[in-house]
Image 1: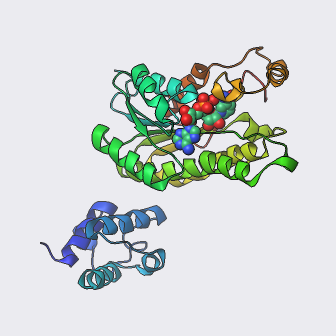
Image 2: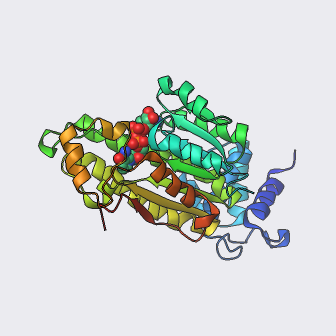
Image 3: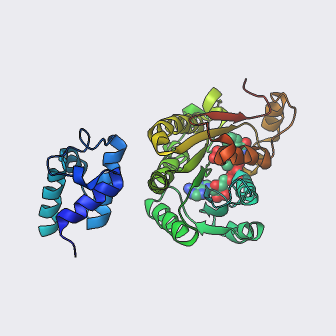
Length: 79
Length: 243
Ligand SMILES: NC(=O)c1ccc[n+]([C@@H]2O[C@H](COP(=O)([O-])OP(=O)(O)OC[C@H]3O[C@@H](n4cnc5c(N)ncnc54)[C@H](O)[C@@H]3O)[C@@H](O)[C@H]2O)c1
């Protein structure tokens, strides 16, 4: 099984249709990857599906960068 | 090629009346159709009227039913690209005599049912970057009607809901429109007293009741590519009652 980080990156690349090289840990979904509000909802839904978890709205709102998502999902997965 | 070839259409409240007529129209337009309804006794006859179509028992106010039906249709027919929120009920009473139950049921089936179905189906439409949602409002939601405070509220709510959804989903190529029928000859209106029917008839410039097909053909138009540049609209189908 691929590690969490690459699974997260793959989802971001597919969902947002961006170049893999742009998906750096510091990249902000909205500012750097051009996501609008519906994109971010779709992204969170894709994470939920991939990892079989539910991400509450409060948590989703705090996920601003690729790094935030990787960190959050790693913690969730490890739990 | 027919205009809805390749489309998968779900029609709620589709075992009779406007819903069944709509299912026939959409099937005629080439769509694979699935009718959802809570009336178990009507399933067989609906299936008989829709060769090639599928019928599912589903109460649109039950989240479980909604999710199960949407998953089943998607699995069996493919991604849903047309949704017609047609399931509806009336419980008429004058405001002063209206029971909480009458209010709640009408809001629940018409408005909340439309919300639950749309939420469940729009996820797939967003993914597909394609879809058309048609919600059944009513002229009563536009102009009000004595004895129908519950129904008028629910149908006006559906109009607002339709516009909000149209704006939210437009960037993903998904459209949402409403149809507002006037006085259509179905089980819903056949239960009105004769006198009320006659009075209503007097208010229709075209001088006759509408048939379910009159509404179904408009839904077919809104579901298909002929209306591809229309979203967030309410089309009144009422023989000229409201102008
Ligand atoms: N007939 C009219 O004059 C008229 C006018 C304006 C709007 N409308 C609207 O058109 C739609 C269809 O009306 P119709 O005249 O065909 O009515 P109808 O009563 O003939 O058919 C409604 C169908 O919805 C089903 N249904 C009811 N509650 C349900 C639920 N909780 N879950 C699933 N299915 C449910 C019923 O079993 C029935 O098969 C309704 O939304 C109605 O409000 C009708």
